[in-house]
Length: 135
Image (tube, rainbow, N blue to C red; front, side, top):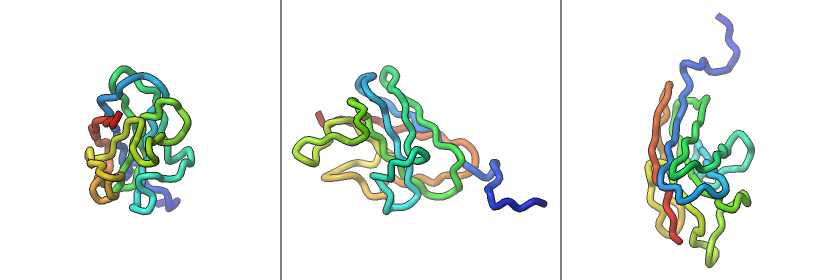
């Protein structure tokens, strides 16, 4: 047996995130996956953490692969002007669409990690969320 330190692919998980209610095909949909509360919902912007997808009609599918089993939460932004940030009005009200795993509700700020966390197991999982817009 060869020990490489890498997880066997059969032990890794894949999440397909189906995002509905995207209001238009402008810009991109950005999704950030976090494995710990301190990284959620902002996450760093390293390429491995962000998945980009051009919105198509009213839904988008984002795929996270190679995930070790555990708890993860994701935040999704419909970055309509593709400026790589969440635009706000009055410094706190989102002007662009957003969603969180488990469709966790945002009330006076983003949900806590525990409210959005999902358990990832080996194999493929499908999660559905609905994009929300304030304006």
